Image (spheres, rainbow, N blue to C red):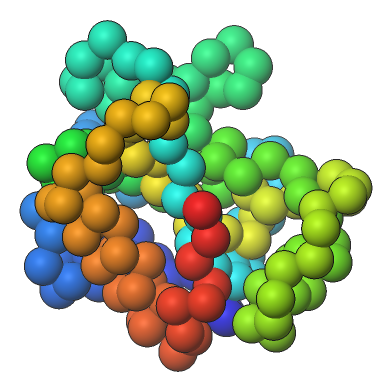
Length: 168
């Protein structure tokens, strides 16, 4: 795609997509860029959070992270009502390491090959959203699915890329 949007552009793109956005603290400067560059970006990564106690607790956990990895663990958390909680911007700990062949396929918008090695820094190359869901068969509310689609499409569109750049 290209160099990342700046934080104000990112916020405007999300709001224009029609999702409700809540800004948390100093999200615009809460990042891990001291660990390396962020960009060029090539798409959007969508994860589910796993078990949680409350949505507010999960947003806070994604904001502060763990001892390893520390937060922010994504750019935004999409809650079950479809609200996007912005918690970080820039390099975040949302994608980890991945396969260079998978990254090449994403860039080319080709079918993804089998991920068989971890030799590429995904945190530097993707926007990331965590979506509150246990991942163990829990149903996805329509509002949350709609928000996932809207933010992924809006970010890809802002960079002139197709929705094929969004990956679960």
